[in-house]
Length: 245
Image (cartoon, rainbow, N blue to C red):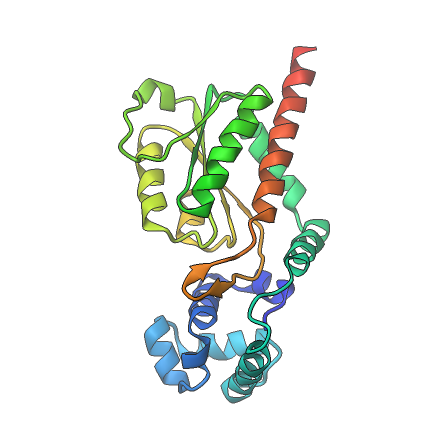
């Protein structure tokens, strides 16, 4: 329904519109343009621009495209995981992902501590990330409890790596706010650069894959996150080795 290039071209308002439509496709397919504008808090002009970015001349054509997508997806609810992987790696070859990873390395390298936060499947990967970074010589911990007592002096020279697919989880945003207040630098690894978590972070590494839901569960692939965590940890290790020579 939406290509990588289309998603990457969206501004903040268009991204919020995209997120609403992907989560409410059946409803959006039968809405009037003013109804959609009202529930998404954007102007009709923004919706029309969004439609043009998706190859449609107007909102009516976009709804036809949306209905056709719904009809075709009835028998293909869950995509082959290889599609999501190729979608991500195509973007890494054409985007500035390596540059963002290097910026993250430059931030992490001098830090005394690295804290990982996240919830749900992102929490599982945050715990994995902490273990992986520690295995390569960067002391890291996964903090599940936002009220876990950490002395301010420890956070002044720390980096927080926040994981979230949507970038809108209230638990994670509250946790980021607390850590930033105490002096921690935040790196967000999330699916969109226009999310709340991305706007709070000092550096965001977006990976842009199509978000997938099945019976209320978010089944969006986490393979890009694994790649980013492992690649960043290895690059930090290399930089420390070069620095010690």
